[in-house]
Length: 90
Image: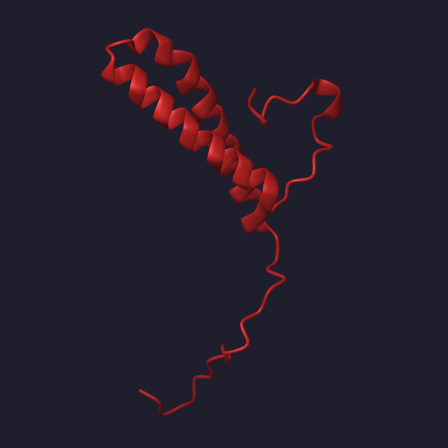
């Protein structure tokens, strides 16, 4: 079962971490393999359920990405220096 299918009583309480995201990515890889295999065998009808799960996972990952891009970054790069523009620099 997909890790995205969470019972209603637990929705909004799940901790999203790198492990959860990696499990979804791994699951998506397996779903793509199954879909490809069924398509090669001419069994497109069987692909529909896997395509729906894959779509749900991708939308969920996109939602996580959108939400995390709204948060201020907590990591900094040590090599980066702020650029300062000076009058006369061209």
